Amino acid sequence: MDANLRLVIGNKNYSSWSLRPWLLLKHFAIEFVEQSVNLASADAQLQMQTLSPSGQVPVLWVDDIPVWDSLAICEWINECYLNGNAWPERARLKALGRSMTAEIHAGFQLTRRLLPMNCRARITLPDMPAALANEIIRIEQLWQEALDASGGPWLLGSFSIADCMYAPVVLRLQTYELEVDEHLLPYCQQMRQHEAIKSWLADAYQEVDVIESVEQLYSER
Image 1: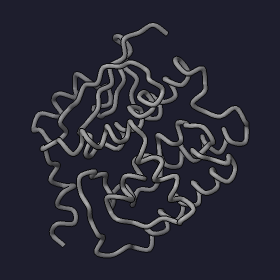
Image 2: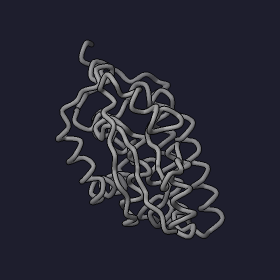
Image 3: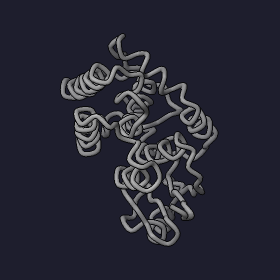
């Protein structure tokens, strides 16, 4: 498809939703223009009124047509640029991948609230609520099921939308110094060593803007 792509994202230190389609585009070497909105700025919402129909990031502009929501963007990229190859051909793996992607897209609310993405930070949690621990266990179960079914090295064998959707979780585990099952360590290490992830983190470390609500979540405890 011949079109100009512009991906509007938030701060790389904080915006887990922005990372997902950005990673897909980078992994498959699809050319696009990156436009950042500082979500910590006073006029962020005003900027977003003209950049995103939903008022949120990310949004992909395809010439003058917007595609918003991280999963919708990934699916659009897969359909229009990747001939469906961002999902595996095997029906069982595709079903598993779509299901676990939908689960992370809509669920794990405690993980989002209590473990917000903060790439620059290293935080030891003062406690681990049982419900949050259960969400982390569920994520580990999904990863292990996918790796067992596919044989790895990525969740569904080859790199897929599922990996993009769970990439922020891998970064959160590092931020909050949470251990994972030893069988999942190679997957997490592989994700952190992905060239696009290293590039994203390098940019995040250089950012100076601060979202106070995230930074203060554990600083006052």
